[in-house]
Length: 432
Image (tube, helix red, strand yellow):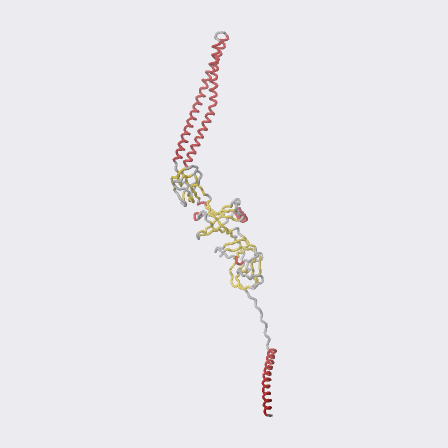
């Protein structure tokens, strides 16, 4: 029995020893870990690095450049004739069609001339009759003036006879009846003389009246000749037919447009510009300076020069029409619309900036020690480079020649932002 107790005690002590051994090892591990942490080197805290944004830059180079005005222009002719006639007649022949080139005086349309010829013949006959009547009246006037002397002599004779009759009657040598006959004869002769004198005095009026008839018939004759000429529609100047409205067999009415012809030697470009722009253009012309414009037509570049400005603002428009002329107008078609680029008067000390380098609130960014700095600018106008790149001309007192300007569209752009220029887009002129 004692032996069993001894075994139990030995087993208990053995289990207790194992537990204490594990606990002791755990305590020793914690102790040595604490010693290592306490006596080991301390770690430095991680520093947060600021990101530098890669950008493109432009070197500021103020120059003198002309702002560019982009507008639409329509090709027109200084002369467009809409030919008509003042008579009504059938069309006998049409010699040209739309697009044909004609010379001044060329016959374009022939109307039936029969009615016109008949009218001319009637007018000629009427005029001839009036001329003959005038000649007859003039002959009568000459004869009447010649007969005045004879009528006056007859009157003198009758008056002498009356005087003798009175003397004889007073001496009782003739009867009263013979005296009355002498008085009657003298009165009749005097009346005839006065009538003749009145007729002679009225001949100038008759001649003038008949001359008026001659003049009227002459005018009618000329009108008939003009009407006959109206049967031939001729080109008033050298140009091209832009529209023909009749065909052979049509009967045209007086005043109706038959054909249209345009003078292609006087082509011009009409464009509408704002009033303030028109004022500046007018000032340039008053200084006897040229204003140039250009356009691309069917792949070819064409140059124009400002010719004149309209004197008023047309109804329904807010601007003023300006007119450009070209020495190569034959290459253009009337009615064609062109994208016109107009060079405005030169502005001094401006920067030509790409539009993507401009930010809202009239702001561009200058690079100062790799950080952005907002700079305000004034917009001068648009500018089109020789490579047809649309830029904006700006001016700022805060930008000097040689300054580095942000040339990227950076959404996070703000004053103080760290940047890293990686490309240089050249000078702000940018017209190479």
